[in-house]
Image (cartoon, rainbow, N blue to C red; front, top):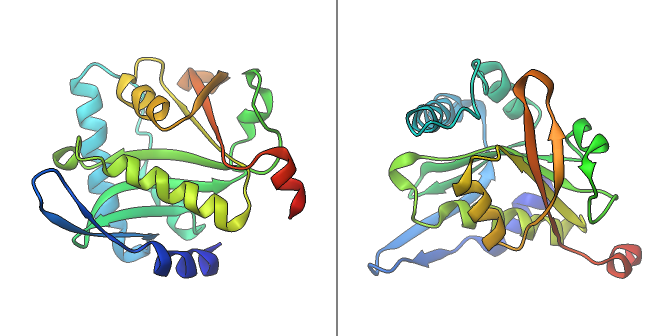
Length: 200
């Protein structure tokens, strides 16, 4: 994945222009251990923002330092940097959620997929469209690696995430039960149709 991603990043490394005409240098890459503290700070800020808004999606110490370290060490931690500052963090995991096998509902596909977990944007950079850019980069990885879908779950009260996913073509598929962490609503975006998948 990382080799393909490096090759892909050379193609998709771009500058985007915001409404205020300011240009940002965008980079989508794998996080390294050097990024750990910055990633953890982003996660903690996002968690605190959730708590202050009354959303208890990330509670009980989740995601913990060990979760983020495991993401980095397993090569699944991805970051979107804006002018070299980490703006968005997410774990992008191939076939990476066992709970998805017992969804209360129906997935649109049952082949390979990328799961996005622990997606968070630095609060000061929210509403700038950077989470959308992160997801677009994951869609691009799927196209390069011939992965037919992306699956994501979120808290039913996380209206920002629900709105984001809906705006980017994700379809509601059902609920996933995480036990003491509660149930989550699940979404899927299909990147390849069945005929295209069978070509590769």
